[in-house]
Image (cartoon, rainbow, N blue to C red; front, side, top):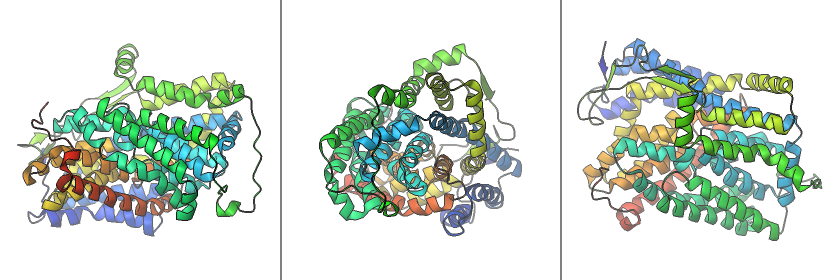
Length: 553
């Protein structure tokens, strides 16, 4: 039976309804931050509680609620968990072949200082992976590398999560910006320009912020020159490419420029003291073995190949060619029990409109498959036998059993939040803040990414709301649409999906709550910074963001 979303279902009140449907979110915060529940238990029980909540509050049909959850669960496994499995498999292969020791030595030979290693790996290299693939790849790969260098797992995962903020808006070859364009009808190039005049401020701050988390202000001052090179080169390249080349390449260009600039700089500049973690104070600095350039290139080849393969996979030409030639996909155009049964309502649409539900997974064009192809090529280069590769893959699947359950349950919650109207109710509540809306506009993106794990999904959820609300209060809509993208990046580090990926990649399964506690305060603090920035751009420096006379393409 068809059912129409009602965003103010209780007493015709947005506030009361928002309070009621936020109960599962409060529960998830409590389960992770206070109860310290294991991720798969927190995710699963949150999903069950949400089903009950939306049925009682919204009167959503139970069958539709369950169907939406199952659609999310399936998307959680394919394509999201598929990316994590392939990424961890690639890492495990390099360890099995003994190449990771060479990788560690090549990085440590640049500097044994943990602060500089974080700038190179967590910030610059992680941003490159976000730009090339997204969906948890940067945390999975960069976190594993830091652990291999000797970082404690919690710090490795936590620092990579915090670092993966500034590049998120342009992640996955610009998919979040393209989605915001589709949702709002505003040119993707215009949104790219606006975001490119917001997130570079964050890009300058994040490297310093990372080092302060690690070593305090005193430790950060000792490496300020390197921090400045890392952050400023990234920010300038991100601004330039987003304003002059469009939304596809800012992360790729900025990360490579930052990585190369920082590596060259620290080749000629060294900090006064070599900083290590407190538990390493009494450890003697290890004299890392010097390897020939040929061996170093061979050890790094999996990640060089990953760069090329993922870059190729992200192009439309390749996707179209492979999609036409290798038609191995799962396609359910009408998801049973949901498609055609749920209707969106005003103010998100002019009149009740069907909220379609379908599922499609193209194996050969999926990002996870690109990483798997990289892993297979890596086996050939590193001369890993098929039997050993299968053994490593089996061990990887066993390693990731619980994280996959966590990811699947979180995506089930995200899809249910969308189809029930829960996400829209929370968005409408923030939209009622009037003159202060510019400050709160990035909070919408933050909430969207927390709920869905994706800046792309957050832009699909709230992009039009940002545009309409800005028009109603008489401010530049392009500014708030961009704010949704910028604020969303800060929700990435606390998203249960991201935390599950980080825990899986760094051996912290069961300690997801510790990761959440580690990142939450940093996420909120940086979000307030972005909120203030957007407020200043709205009322004090409106010329920073171009005014669009005609929003339609």
